[in-house]
Structures are given as structure tokens and as C-alpha cells.
Image 1 (cartoon, rainbow, N blue to C red):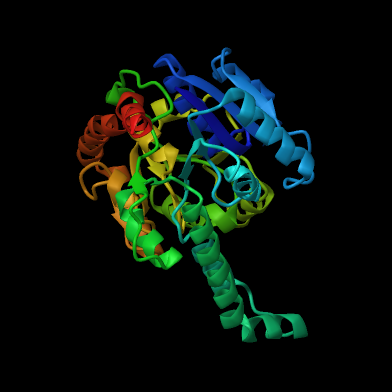
Image 2 (tube, rainbow, N blue to C red):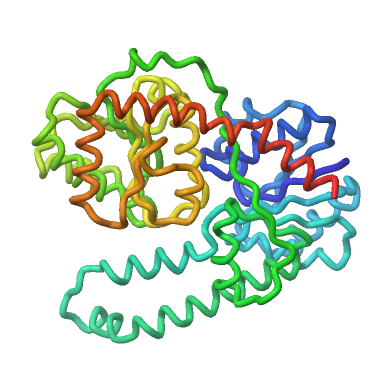
Length: 389
């Protein structure tokens, strides 16, 4: 069977790119003929992780996604390779419109994977408008007055886009069953029989962990982007805890547009025990040492770092702010889910976990056991069953 992955950026350090590499390699090892086509190919050092026998194509025009040049190139690749299935890894980028353009000319089955909550864009917009600092000037006043109109038009576009994605897909994959009613509401569709759910796999190989070797480290792994990841919330929480429990260390792994802002916030609050490590190709060394992993996002799809950290015995602490959070974390058993967005509750729960060794070790053991649900073998076989249909 021939499979063509269709993705905007590949290779890359993001979750979508990482999952694409892992699933593509898995399918190739199971005997599938796998190829990948993308627009942007910047982080070429990551190609070392992709099986050398998997062909990677690059669209000729990166500046105009919907150019005739790209459309002709895409159709020529499909015509020559004749894939049985095209796995579309983009449900937000303009690349989907290119797939729509060639749909009528091809016989390949199209599977679209939505790598976030279906209402993610709306939630991010709502949060931005709600928390934007108000300044008394003409533009700001008009923006506040027209907020309902802005939100209405965004909702209309989100609904229109999801209906388009659904219409031109033969199967539509969400990362959690709990996203299905969210999709139904977002798209405004009554019948959604194309929808299936397949979780993201753990993309790193688990190793035996000695919990006694864990250190007093709270870890964050991800983009330093306050708009999407709300890392500034976490820094403020850690600042309060530092005053109570000064013998722990807080390690932030990742980079992004808000790193300087976050470092300034740390200096402003005089938090001495936060370390910024930047982007790291090997995060296992941090998972292995850390006792706790923290997140403070408004919305996520299926965060790879949660299951990965659990595999290495890091106890996750996060807001119960997205549907799949409770799929991964069972509150009080393998981690802690906190009512969004109660900062005081977060401080209390995290502090108690830090000082209670027995509770932390129990949760760490449960986290390791539960993470096997998301092993590559389990999730990969779900993909095989879907492709066989």
C-alpha cells in the first residue's frame, strides 16, 4: 500500500512534524511504501530521524502556496506515485486548499488529521481579546466595541473551514474521542460519520527509570509563546512557590518569541532557581531527572510532552482546560488536573506534590504504567487498521 503524507513544514521541531516522522517510519517498517511532500524544509538536521528509504518531495514555490506551479507539481507526484491514501497533516494552513484543487482529478483516499482541539483558534482569540490590556485611544476603544463582531466573523470562518475540511476528506481524525462533540458544534454538522479518533504516540523510546534517582526539579518543555502556551502563567506560579520551597529547581526547556519577556519576568520577580535551557534535541536527559512536569496552556490537541514525560516518571500538573487532558491524566492517580485557571489552586496542588514524596512516587509509578496506552505499537496498529478499511 502506498501512503503520501501531505504537510506544510517538514522536517521541523514541532509536534506535528515529530509525529509524522514516527508514524511514517512505523508504517514503512510494516511494509508500506511511504513518501512525504512538504513546502518548508528548514530543519534538515532532523532528517536523520526519518528512514533513509522514505522519499521527501518539496513544493517548488514556497512563497505562493496555491500557485499553478505547485498545483501542477502536486498532481504530477500523485499521478506518478499513485498513493492509495494521502494523509493530510494540516487542517489550518492554506495547503488544504491545494488538496481541494486536485481532489477531483485523483482517486486517492484522503485522511485529514486535526492536531488541535477543533475550537482552538476561537479559544485563543477569545483569550487574547479578554486579556488584552485596555488603553484609552481610538484604535483600542474601537477594538473593544467591535469585539462581538470580530468573534462572530472568526466563528463563521472556523465553521466554514471545518465544513470544507470535512467535505473533502474520506476520513477525519481527531486526537481524542472527547473532541468529537467539539467538532460537531464547531462545524455545525449533524452527521459526522467520517470522524474517528487516534491519539498521538509516545515518540521516544522508554527506558527503565529509577525513581530514587529523581531530583527536585519541576520541568516545562515546549515553545516559549505566551499567546499559545501561557508560559508566563507558569513563571508567576513558580515565583510564589519559590518563596515557600526554595530547595527545588525549575527547568524550562524550549525557545520561542517570548523567551526574553519571560527572562525579564523572572528577573523582575527575583526568582533565583529558574533555568532556561533553550531548544534541546535530547529532552530525555531532562525527563529522566525531573520529578514533575508542568503546563498552563489554555488549549492543546494531544500534547506529546505529557505522555513522554509520564513515560519517564514525571508527574504531570496542568489545567483541565482542554478535552484530551482527562484522556491522558487521571486526576489524583497519575497526575493532577486543576480547575482552569485558578492560580492559587495550582500553587497549592503543586506545592503539596513537591513536599509529599510518597504521593509523588505513587503517581510517578502510575504515570509510567499508564503511558503504555500510547506506545508506538498501540497507536501504530490503530493507523494500520484505519488504512486497511
